[in-house]
Length: 406
Image (tube, rainbow, N blue to C red; front, side, top):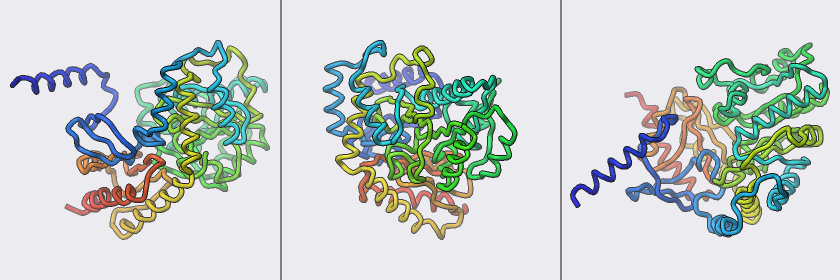
């Protein structure tokens, strides 16, 4: 009996060492969650302001989602795309309704959705007789870690060691039409502009609404595809179904993932008339994309979001949380600004602050730090005012202490 605890510890260490070393993990293992709360193996409670990095739209253990998934598991988990999948057709129709676009391809991740968007743009170019199509991408962007999406990503640090990168990308700064026009002037190979409506990993950098409108106009004038990556900022997170809708525009291609399945892996590429029929049978595919379980998760997520008015909640709670953060921090030396929209929030400091992830964990709060100086808060859309107040109660003292000279 006296050896039981060391044996368990040794077993856990052995299991952990068997996992490939691709993450710098914090020293905690969670056993379960409910709503915005999570508990570790020792029974300690945490408030989840990260939601699996904008994935758990409905929080943890939502009763309606759990019941729907249990029902679907008992019926059918997987069916390959040789056959019609009814739930796939239903979810596609719902995404078309919400976006005002026309057709959907389903995959399993945001990376896959962005990879498909890049392929769409290249095939669009080849159909126009362009042998070496080029796509405009952005500084500080993040589109994934496959070789193609990594090449499109604007982060030198995560590209190191993986060259040669894929060619065919032109990089520009955000929110500068002049820079975009200069970078593409006289270039007949440009086929698309690819951007995040709000950059997530790049630091919660918001594309200005007028800039989005200008790019939409430029793409129309030059017969380019306008592709908006909504993987992190989509699915109601900003107070609209999709963040670009604040600008009153529609893209030609829109990759989605993260919050679409509330934790079940779901990716999608939604296309408008200009891009919807570029792919033909055999051009693209996936084994797991569009499977019945993932589609049921997407359908149930959207149904709950509608019935519980979670889009409106994202606006109200986002405004409240951002307001409280600014109220508490605006006069603190070292605080820079609050960035973002709705429940996609960045607290920018004037110095690297990755240490705050571990300090917040100790204080029972889950968050992340991105782009070195940005504290990222992307809680579940079911968040209530009391949760926002608890975030303030736990986070603000940590920031003030961190910024106080030793």
